[in-house]
Image (cartoon, rainbow, N blue to C red; front, side, top):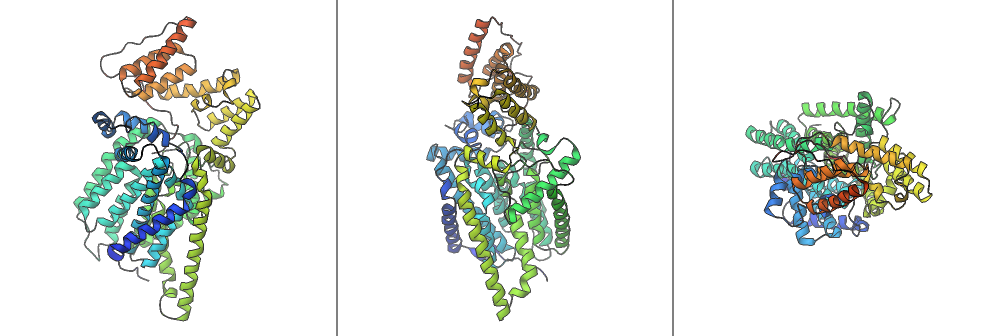
Length: 571
């Protein structure tokens, strides 16, 4: 059966589009209602509440935010200036209100779902099917994390802008180019739009005019221009291969297995969780074999649909291109996340609807009684699926009200993962068992977790921080900070601050004081707190009779440090 010809995006226009957005917005607010009164979670604090560059925007802040090698990039660990600008606007309008930020995310999520409906209709999918695809995306349980965490506005907005660029480029290439550039400056994962557009330029070239090749060159130039500082930021975090295993074959198997887990999560969904930490894949891992079979089947399907110049090929490309940045080619501390599926889902939904339409089209067409039964049965099945997803998302929504709730879910789903170990170390502290605390800290270090600062704020662990076994583990984590932060020529103030704290927690006062002095001389938003820390460190040094070690410093920007500890590790 030949694929249906593309339909104009005006299949849902004007008041009908506005009505759909209102309906989607109300549905999203109802489904996610339990999470609306939650607090700041995940990196909301780092990216919004405590980001010094977006609190009260000045010209200096703007320069730092847009500087592709500036301190704002180091602080957020991404080159995403438009993302920071939107958060600055939200702070100016709403103040530090998590509820307002979450509502904005939900309304933007409804926009993304509507844009997906328009894109599906543009590909020839009948409007009821396109609306069903948008609703599937709207209530999917895996999207709960992306719309609940305020800082994940970057995922929602970049996906919306990327879909808009794909929708507009055939008739309004200049506006689409602006949308694509903006999407990249919100989150680099919007790069999916370029390969998807190129595939559709090929598949549609026989039936309709395609944008001039110069537009694709411009899109590619924008992609490279943003990729350079973005990958520079990611290199400062440092890769974390521990999560995927130590050898290349294990890493390849793990990447394939992760792809299979995402596919299952998209369809059922199976395995949604906070702080995913699947174990590295061995040869007997069923996820690896499922991924291998799925990868082969999808590759064959993509080649087959591409040769037939089917719209479906573009959606498969969208899914693959959106998966590529989070596929663990560059490993993260947490190798999976529900929110990483957000930009992948539109591609899977479009490809699934087109493949399903080709398979079931003859049975659904026509006025006969049999076709009517097929249509009724399919509508009932879709209704059950959408209702089940909506209920599942509503029931799971409270998980995203606090980091503690997310941590408990992660510990249940991954009993040998980082958050299970953190809870176990806390419980060992309550039992006053320092040897057990040290055992869990050792396992955390083996898993790649080096954020020793979290232990300093745990009242259950504080009495045991100087116990030799516990101290040994914390010193080891701090040493890894020192190793990573000790290589770049031009560190920012925040990196020097982190390096100084690592020295001080190891009781290495002389290099700690010298590094604090360099951080203050470097200048930046943390100078006041650094000066206070320096006063305390100098007082401790005098009491203990330690002479501070002063390092010679050339005029201008200091040299000698690089990197940032991968607390988050996400592009």
